[in-house]
Image 1 (cartoon, rainbow over the protein chains, first blue to last red):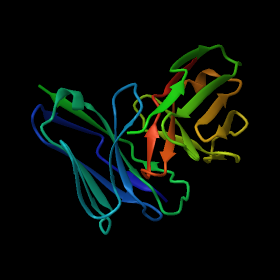
Image 2: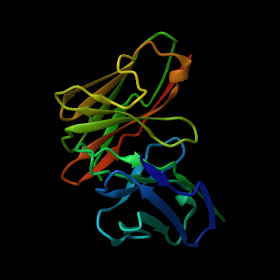
Image 3: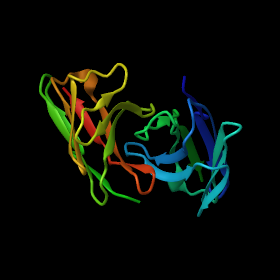
Image 4: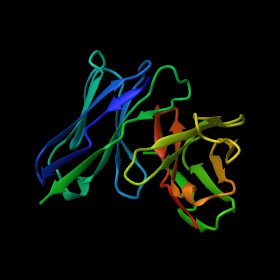
Length: 112
Length: 115
């Protein structure tokens, strides 16, 4: 079956760094996505990894290790507006339409 | 990123009525769109995959006769919740697959409240 695990909640202070881990066991692999979702809003796309390694986009970086079934999202120089739920999603190779399997999300709380 | 719109953003209806939600990709063509439902403090639950010009594919446990999906063009998919009941109250979100960018972009969501 499909299994995507990420922590339920993390708290960090403004200006700090937080790393959100995601482990997955899926029927094949064709990419891992991170989305940010503020309360009451739809998810917004943050990053996409299909090969091993680190992808950096400003304050956000995402890392992938396919052999370990592991990814993390790194948020640097945290700002209050970064308080949100962060969703890890995997696209299995078995799905030709590009369907994503989502984790339950990690609620990040940024404190002053 | 690409833009996906949804309409309406919020709807309140009486039990037994039907509600139609539109999802449009504004600056790219989407052969495939997805419909999700999200209950408070829970993750996204995929309801169905909508393919332009063909029948939608529903996830296990989702009633196709209750949640009618039509993907009539490369920029528009609609979800109709038929004979809505209070338990159908939820946040409905669509996404569209942008094949050139190899990713999905989400619409802003529709909050449905059934009285």
